[in-house]
Length: 415
Image 1 (cartoon, rainbow, N blue to C red):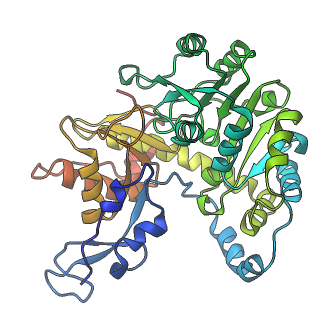
Image 2: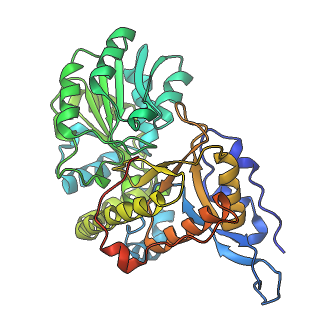
């Protein structure tokens, strides 16, 4: 029989544990598995635990991309990929720019977007940085670790964590911040600023040392057709746009991201990066992308549908608040009196459902969960787990069938 799942690691870090580390929490249960009490166990004996595949609602992946064909090709090339050095970063960057229609002089690729955040901090942030919170933790943690002043602009729950740009600019002026950052869509709430709003902000802050627009989740936006300001960043004097291919493509383990800026800014970052900072898996995927543009666009359409349906399902749970999102995740506020950390532990230990509790995010609390958007069948299992933990003893709730969901209006919910 498997040993009980030790969830202590979930409370010991500012970030969620890796999937590999999570699996090591219960080594006897098998990779990616948890244990669910049931009438019959693996051998069919009454009272024995049933093995249950662990389900990830924590790490923001794209469940529809890469395609099975792409994974098959990666498996076939595994030996060669692991045996030989990758090409240098300039070669891989040139290929990516050819696929995306970008000028290589305006692009720097990193071993994950967090590597680029690190270099932006070291090279371009001299004294202070303004950032709305809650947001992605490295934008506060990284400059604090190097002794910079971080001016944190709190987003109000009463306004659904929406960023008021005029108030943000006033805050920057009042504090004298020299660098400003926004994440669009924002993590963890998925709040989105339209392209014209972001351009207004860039115009207002043209005198700052630097303005960073982190667009790590921009591909999941369906509110407008062309939401990115990357083309503008390439011709503006003080703007960097950051992108995360790992988040878009569901390949966090490969670790690749890129930034777009004018040639001088991009060149400053590029010169600081190691010549071989990208791995062979990243190269293999980048050189496959041009063949899979259509499946990738289709994956985004499917995820947009799932986001709307998942919002509708969660909004039907009593006392649960679902916030408007344009990311591939939803921020929810738990019913009053619910301890999010304890709920996270129960969901993982009893149902094999892994969620992101937001108590360790600056500007948030343990009453909030960030839930990654997943397909219908997975959401049904999440709903069952939430019912079993939040409403134990209550009558079973009716959830929408796939046929019923298909006819629901495609919209996101806020309170």
